[in-house]
Length: 397
Picture 1 (cartoon, rainbow, N blue to C red):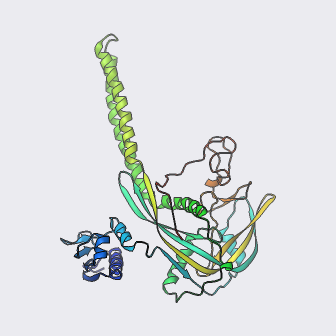
Picture 2 (cartoon, rainbow, N blue to C red):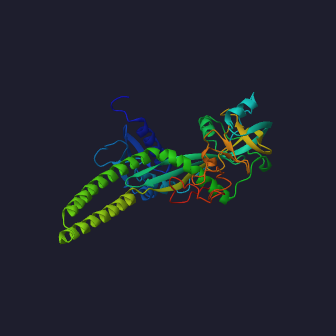
Picture 3 (cartoon, rainbow, N blue to C red):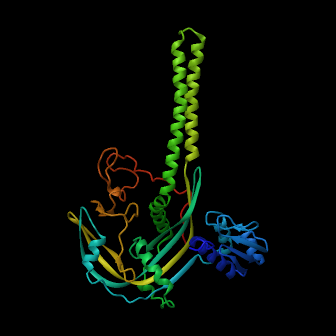
């Protein structure tokens, strides 16, 4: 990269901001690789809190008088005011050539690995589906703050979360021609009720948040443990010294009583400081909806029979012709897409190992989809999530 060139991420952000401002009616001129000059009309000035003529910098140290623009600052909120509700939802109708997989049983076996049950392919047929790709913004606040974007995909026909499949479809959208005609309503899956959508998104976003925040949480834990150790060592030394002095004094000596009070005060102060640390490092996560992309396209629909002991049930999965891959069914308890999968005895739910783990109290495995609140044998509460979003997750497809 040339010495005077802007880093790729700064260049992408500058291109995005320039395009947004131009579309909003501002005059934009690039004066340096990471600096633009903006002449803004009144609506843009009001939404972005900008003067009429200003310079926006995208590097770590912009020139004097220029405003620095970065994704970690409040600029996302400013652009949200500028966009208002524009660009929040988009529908694309795709119609690629539908070629059925040459070996459907092999494709099914690759995606549906079961440890305690069997499956059988009943049939494959062409169909239409609706994918929803949601983008959420999260903010994690503790001693420090972390912000970012997390996305998840949803197939309204099967309930699967085909993130990997949609990642393979997205590059095709840039080169796609005009949208194909919308198929008839009878050929498409119906929209979900708001309560079902809300519950599914709230559960599905948790594993993605845990992955996105894992480095931040690791740093917080390391710093918390370090501060707790320092706090303990300091008060432990004070406590030992108070005990030593108290032991050297006679039982009827008033100084012994004072040392005992001092020892109790040290213990009380330690508990208070430890509680302060817990509040200081407590984590609050908020999640807000940003965008929804709806993709309507043909798929190959697999009808699968699941067998566990003497019970059986059928369900469907979609094979995407652009990604050339079969979607992975989600865990019925957590909506995670991890593998391998287990099957519960009660309702034949597909679960991750965590979803069918033994109860920590009585040791009996139980299905977290059938019994989300507690163990059915001993009523021990189910494990709480690592953290809970402070705001409810909402979406408007």
